[in-house]
Image (cartoon, rainbow, N blue to C red; front, side, top):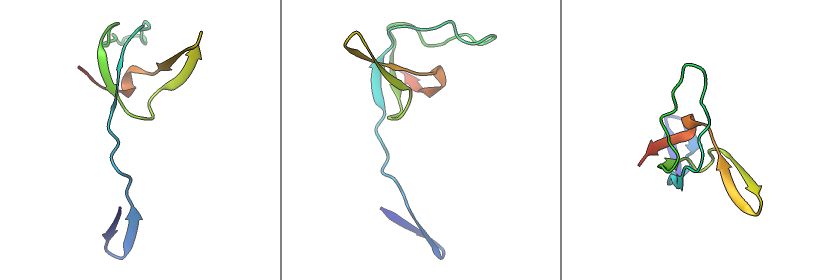
Length: 72
């Protein structure tokens, strides 16, 4: 999709739907910052959030709490 502003035109990206996941582990957080997400929470996060890893044949996504859009 292209939009036109004045004499300039630019390409816009279609909006991505957020991804959903269940938290299986939570670290201690940073100093002076209490973690709000807990093990077992269902969360929504952006499509490109976190780092994918494979551990013992299972796929996991490691991310910072800041990458979570909402706790459901």
